[in-house]
Length: 347
Image (tube, rainbow, N blue to C red; front, side, top):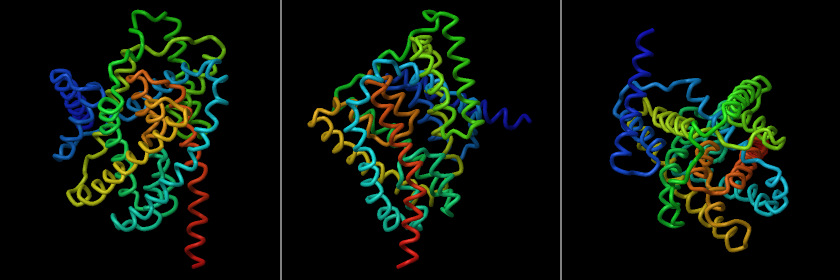
C-alpha cells in the first residue's frame, strides 16, 4: 500500500518542481507546461511515476463546467453563422486521414488498422479503444495519440505567441474569494452529476462532456453565469499536464525512435495543415485568426479548451468546432474503417 502512495507523492512533487521552475524562469503556462515537462523528462529517464487516477479525471470535469457556462443564449443565436466553418470539419478530417494513413503505413511501418486509428484526430482514449477492438497495436496507438497531445500543447502556444501575437496570460476565471458560495456548490454538483451520470449512460468523454452538458443547461436557464474559480482551473492545468508527462513511463528507446518520433513528425504535418485551414477561414471571414487556429488544431478537448481560456479566445466557437470534430470521428471512423477493410479484402 505504501509503494503506490510514495510513487504518487513523488510524481506530484516532481510536477510541482516543474511549476516552480517555469515560474522562476517566467516561462508561459507554468501550471500546465511545468508539470508536463518535468514529469515527461523524469518518466523518460525511467522513474516509476504514476498518475492520480480519478483525481486527474476529475480535473476534466472542471473544464467541462467552464466550457458549459460559456454556452449562453447568445451563443445559440450565433450557431447558424458557424454553419459553413462547421461544414469544413468533415472535409478537414478526410484530408488528415488521406495524409495520415499512408504516412503511418510507409514511414512508421504500422499495419493498416493501427495506421488508420493513429491518423484519426479523435480522442486518445476513444481511438485507442476502437483500434483495440479492430485489432490494432494498442501500444503504438496510445503512444501516437499521447504524442499528438503533447506536441500540439508545445507547438500551438508558440504559434499563438509568435505568429498571432497573443498573450497567454488572460484571466481564466475569478478568484474563489469573488464567487458566491452557492454558485460554487452548484458547479460542484454539475461536475459530479455530469461526470458520473455520463459514465452511467456510456457517454464518450464523460468526465468533460457530462459536466459540459449539465452546466450548459444551467447556463441557458440563467442559473450559472460565472466560470469555476481560477484556483480550480489552475489545478486542472496541473493535473492535465502531469497526466500527459506520466503517459511516457516505460517508453523504450526503440519506441521513442520509431513510434514517438513518427507521431511527432505527423503532428507537425497537422500543424501545417491547421495553419492552411486557418488561413482559409480567416480570409473568407468565417472566423478571426486565433479562433480559427484553435478551432482547427486537432488537440484534445481539454487541452484546446484550456488554450482558448488562457489566450482569451472565443471559447464557445472553439469548443463547438472541437465537439463537431470528435463526434464526426467517433461516429464515422468505425464505419469508414469497415468500408476500407472490405475494399481491401475484395481487392
